[in-house]
Image (cartoon, rainbow, N blue to C red; front, side, top):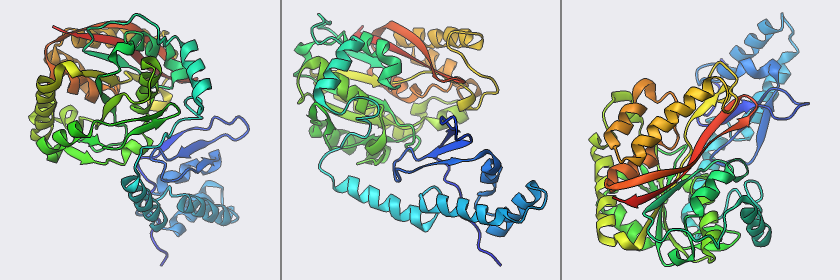
Length: 407
């Protein structure tokens, strides 16, 4: 009797191969437990569904023999596929568990949160980075606005979202360099109804951005059951990293203080139809943020690292999405309807638009936006820019640049 094959990890990024001469599915690990990427050729793609934690290698071989009308030579190909996925850390195997435990231990012991997207999402040297951000329109010499409560900017690749990034970050100027920036970022892979904190400074090519550990410790003490301390998601998540880069560039210094908070999905609210704060842990964290604002209000500026809708083939839709065309015109209308509720600080109205059909627009910024609205309550917002961008030929992400003032 052959052993059951390990489960293909559920949290992997699986998408069409971007390599023209290597069609199939690209598999990569968003947690970066492994830096390897695998392209599964079209002939083997159907077999991935067999890696469900219940089938054996013999089951997989029999499946492919039937699929190839009795070609017994597929046995070696199947073995190679399973070995590649296992050794690469893509299966729930002993190899993966060792990789995961080692990475978690290394992050917990590290003194800094090192950049995970420099050299890919943006240049990894300070001068080329400064030049690129200036070309994007994020101007350190912009007059800005001295009365800001918050800004919202994308977390999509700066290459795709630079106009919305610039629209938001031009509202800041060096006069904010003595502020503490509370950064609410989307945790794409974090635990639902949890908030990931870290005391580590975020390092960018401009240098380390210190974390206000006094505030971090205060939040952890006030809502311990809602917090994941030294959340490993910080190690690979980009939604906060990109904000740190823009902050340091616009403010002209590397030692601006931040409070990086990763907001896990409010999955329970979409399942039950009840507001997120009906979960006691989530409510306690909102209360802790409200108290933080009451205590340090003039010292704080809030930053939301958010994207909006995710539409098209990459996200499970049965059509190819093109920005500002066809169905995406309705996406724009619905995005703008939600943003109007955000600008009006209408938390209940915003949730009423999000919850139907488990948020069919797939706003990955839902949890940071709602956290900000429910915690701050009294403000007014302005949409500075709204955009849609084809992240690939079949899929679109929408995003925005916004500013907020106290009501």
